[in-house]
Picture (cartoon, rainbow, N blue to C red):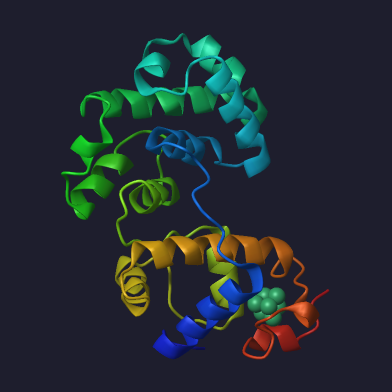
Length: 222
Ligand code: SF4
């Protein structure tokens, strides 16, 4: 099992970037759209979220106060393509109640340090670690590592022994990448892309750009 190794991690990042190019995440026009997208993408595919975001825009709800005063039914109808419309409507409304305390202004939230901001976000019913870290990274530009199922599978297969659920080990990883939010954001996007193209549930190791450094790639997986 590997420990975190600066050179190897940087090599992986560079190889993924060379292979797939910059991913341009997060694909949104406003911070509020990022927040809405991060909540809607839970347990669904991004293409479904895109349809919901378009519906919200058409209904005039892609603005915090307008969504705040809208009826739950109207929100649920717009976000239906993302699945679980009632549950996700509740989650959006929970976030909006929280956001209202900051006068619906992300600049006000930015005044909190990363620890306090993360703790506050996690106090919102429906915002878990992955969603909170997505907001911290892509809205507030804080240096955090987003750990989702793709990330865990990818690093496990590459032979890493660190537990990404441990905050101290996540911090080590962040520091290895120079604590740069733009690099961390790009790395996350690249891992998601790689996990969809090569490192799938049944991986396509033969065509993988990392096969020369990945022990998992040498094993037959049926
Ligand atoms: S060699 Fe296979 S397991 Fe390793 S990163 Fe590539 S696709 Fe994933």
